[in-house]
Length: 570
Image 1 (cartoon, rainbow, N blue to C red):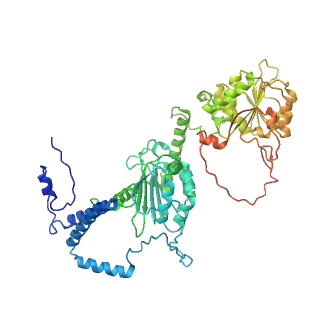
Image 2: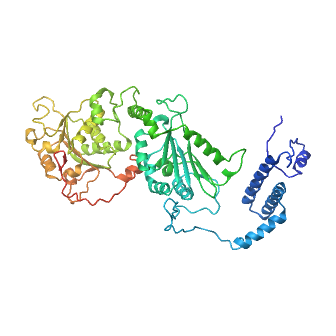
Image 3: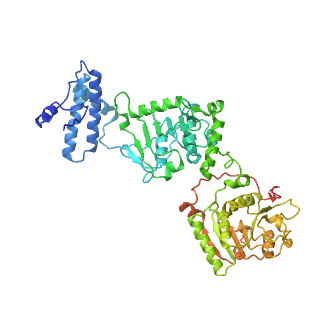
């Protein structure tokens, strides 16, 4: 069996004979300056780059001599093809050395500072900023994995040197744009161009984020690809590219292609594989370099995509938004996508009350299971009061519902200072218990929401402000289990009055921050029994909460006299 290996490159004159002597068959042809001028010139240029690459990697003296000789030989062949003599080259070398110097002193240029104070309006003003990562001595292609050098750092470095940026990312997050807001804004306001192309693939991108992105960076050009023929909004075209093209003036452009979407995870947090190409993308292959071919394809997709105004004019934006909410409901509830889009557009409590048969029961997570085990153990030991300290978003309300369920007690009182908290708590308890968990007792109600003379004791979700003046209507031991949300408020007189009155079999206090600014002790209300504690950064590290961004804005307004009264600020 014979196997043919293709090379398609220039070789030294005696190479075919050397191969034949080894008993192999050679196929070759002569590229003459008369008949194949263009093909010969391209082959010579590619051979120069090949020999430069090999000389670049040469280490030993013998290797350097060999690769240097090869490079000189192909360079002389190139000069001959272009009708240039070696004498002309030498004369030019001497003249340039006289004017600009040689490389004898090994001077390595770091940066150039430019005075921009005299720049006219409209001229691009260059800004000198410290690089977040050290400049490599020789730029070369590499793989960026977010381990040693992050995509984020490389992106900033490339942005500083570019005149235009073309980004294609199937998915994106506003957090990523927020993290780079100021560098991108500076880039745009300097007169540079950014084009950002994204998709609606799998309806991952939230249409409302398109509007937010336009407000965040109004100078950035933004389009959405939906397909080219027979656009199907329910199942948009699967554009899955992740490409970042940095176009530069008077120097080679660069390109990043790989696995990173323009999300905070893709930029910094995830393990990604992104191929960063600085130099070899400009090697001439056939008609265009890889960079030019990528830019050409980007332009083709861009011309077939929709701006935000075009999405609205065609009625696509509203349709995509409805489909997004419909898909989101299906994802969250794992239900048929034909159900109405209520889950993410309405409060959870409203959706639950309108669709009690569609509420999947919740299951405790691993950390919640640990807390439940600790609470049960404390009760076995005779403890009747305990606190759970957990970061916001951990699921303290869910935890309280499961603990009431496992306690086997007859009824509960859930206390909070906001009606919305009670509504959401009721929705959570319904999903845990699988039935209507009880009534809400809030301001404006003339009487209790149930008859105390009923044989079975009732559950109650009550606002502290409403219950504080009605405690005497209940027997002191009416509630077996009391849950106090936002437990750090327990030191307030309204809470204290309720806690001093009722005598439950078990009291659970829940808070993310037991430390009060006024120094008052709230843990005394649970006899300093802390059943479980997980603070914010621990919860993030364990994967129960997402890392977050926050922005501080200075505000001179004095809020000291603002009070929350009767469900609103005064």
